[in-house]
Image (cartoon, rainbow, N blue to C red):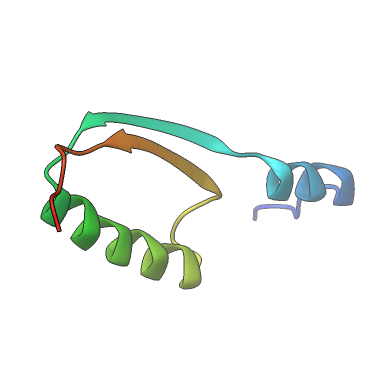
Amino acid sequence: MKLPKPAEEQRSEHRRLERVGLGEVPYEAAQADMVRWVEERKQGLAANRLFLLTHPAVIT
């Protein structure tokens, strides 16, 4: 049987932020990935993450 974590340890986990460096990603792929990442976070499947990426210039 797995015991629950102490309250302080649980609070500490909520403050953590995982840094994810992706480099350069095509704009359309980055946009699609962001939608997926939001859903993962909403469903509790992913922790707090900071995604760092760039994409090629987009001319509008």
